Length: 112
Image (cartoon, rainbow, N blue to C red):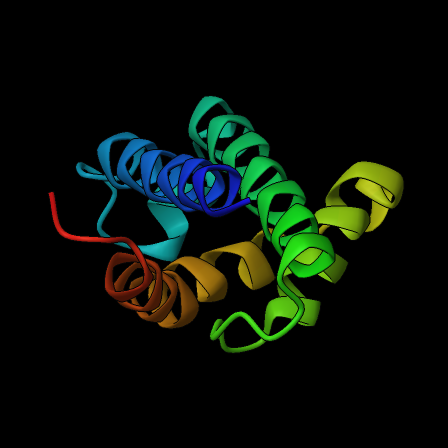
């Protein structure tokens, strides 16, 4: 089970790294909002993060990830409520919550 948990945590970090790469040249919400390619790539990786967190909660419900339920709910909104996705909300997640998630997940992974 620990191997599966570590894989899911690694998947989350991989998605965060891709999001950081996709947005490395994006410095404002206006730039983000005007780039649908970046928005779609970011949203896809947020979906994957949400699915990985959902799987983690099933395997290890006590996992120390702040707002784990909210992450899963965001994934569900992106997939099932695509027509009501607000790019400002996604941008806020990138700015406020992604760095926290990155730090928490990095702490949970064993040092290599």
